[in-house]
Image (cartoon, rainbow, N blue to C red; front, side, top):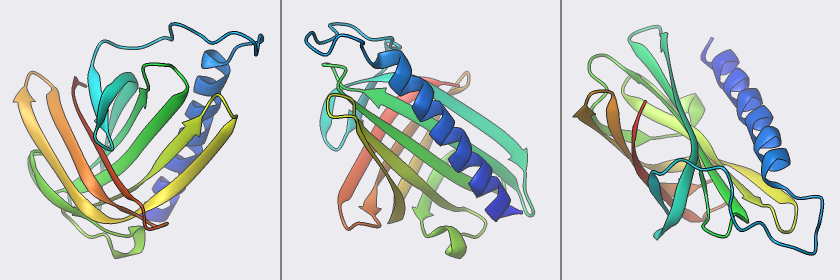
Length: 169
């Protein structure tokens, strides 16, 4: 069941990525876009706070032991050439606020998180999707559906990665 949910989430992420690439790309390669469609919410990605959210969604489903919360959050760089997407899933037994270990999908239990990050370089038409190997996810409930999502960890390719933002879902 969780594997099917993860596969569905991955397909959703890839579809979202395709739409984002087509909406941010230009037919004229000689000029760079000076503005792209963005929310006004700031995001810090790998220590760089020049990113702005492009989209953020939270999906809530019933799980085996608790409530599954899936977050797909994308941020675009100030020059509109780089997009980073955090997809992270956590099944919780109570309220969403808390600190969670990020583990491999197959090792995830109740109150563990797992997920992936996608990196797009729109200027060079390249993209990579890398599973998160380990890390920590902190979720702060700011009230009124506003959550702070703070991820820090290591990806499967060994690279350190982080993503932090506050958004009303």
